[in-house]
Amino acid sequence: MEWFTAPDQWLSRIVFQRGLAGLYCVAFLSAALQFRALIGERGMLPVPEYVRRTRPRHTPSLFHWRYSDRLFATVSWSGAALALALVAGAGDAVPLPVSMLLWLVLWGLYLSIVNVGQTWYAFGWESLLLETGLLAVFLGNDDTGPPVLVLFLLRWLLFRVEFGAGLIKIRGDPCWRNLTCLYHHHETQPMPGPLSWFFHHLPRPLHRVEVAANHVVQLGVPFLLFTPQPVATVAAGLMVATQLWLVLSGNFAWLNWITIVLALSAVDASPLTGEHPQPDPPLWYVVVVVAFTAFVLVRSYRPVRNLLSRHQAMNRSYDPYHLVNSYGAFGTVGRIRDEIVVEGTDDPVAHPDTVWREYGFKGKPGDPRRWPRQFAPYHLRLDWLMWFAALSPGYAREWFGPFVERLLEGDRDTLRLLAHNPFPDAPPVLVRARLYRYRYTTWHELRTTGAWWHRTLVREYLPPIRLREPTDTAR
Image (cartoon, rainbow, N blue to C red; front, side, top):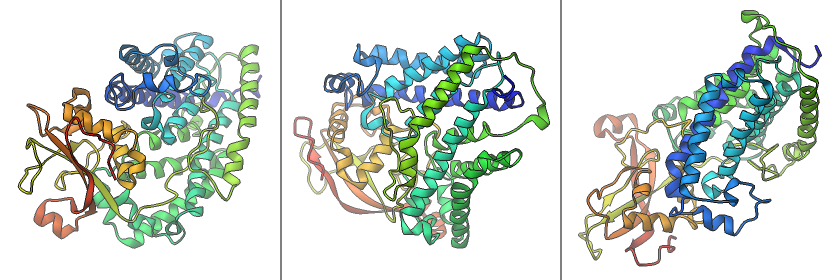
């Protein structure tokens, strides 16, 4: 069975598995702390209503069997606890079949959440976490050397993530081809981080170098993952460096971190650590891994066809289990940034002298003087969807009205998603939303005003409404 394992990759496996378990923990924590307002029994898009109109075979989830907020909380916190146990090494402390079962349970619990999460979970990194998590089931533990075939599948996934992102850019917005996209990206990305303002003000020639380097790393370097060591390690190192650059410049949930974890699985640390003697794999395990590898390669047909298509999709799953998916990001880069500002008032009737008080969000821009915060890899789902809602009301048609209703009710769970509630004693009588155009301030403006953003009113997004009026009139 010498062909089957790569004993010199034992440290790479440990780093990958512990890192992935840590990201699982963040994902379950994000679900546990936000679900009641988003998809709970009294949430904006309640799970019970969703499962009544969908079939289990289309959205497999244990919540088709039964749903309650208590059960969802139990699933989320149990997933976080199991992930923490795997971070601590529980997977290596139990027999191989039990270790595989632990990883499979973790995958199944998160799949159950994603498949009832609706628009709040419609992000490419959800599928990426699930696909990576399923591969981890077959990577084994300290009872055997890391299977070469699964290590190959991890590189194949990393290849599709990076090469797919590179192709969607070069085929998409012309600014990627003329190397000017970063003139705008740091300012218009969904959720800027604390350093994004400074990245935006880097010299424009450096922005062009950044884009060119990105093309090299995403379109050329991925092929080197399948070359002998140490070339594959160098390729993985370049990807890690690029992803860390993205971590510093923005807030993209766990997308960058899971890509880093995948890249670390391709690093050969044997010159530093040597081989770690491990037992030969049992025959049943070899058969299972070979069968699973063949299954993944067959299922790769549609992602490969998507990569080769002139009409490449950016992020797509081809089955409800998110098994082998297509990935990509930022095929188009916005040139302007619009933000929705939500305000309330105690006045029973709106008039020109009405004093409106602004709600503050945790991650998305609001108060121009508030310095953006770092939240990734934690995922602020409401803040992300507010960015989409500013692009087009169509993205918010299902949930924006219920969101405003809960502000008018003073719903505690919804208010917990916000950084600032301007009505701590009683909910407002009226709530409205306005669309503003945001841009970064200049160095001079920052020094003189202390503001990171300058904003200008564009138009009304939602007229003032009270609790018993319809809330689906956003335009």
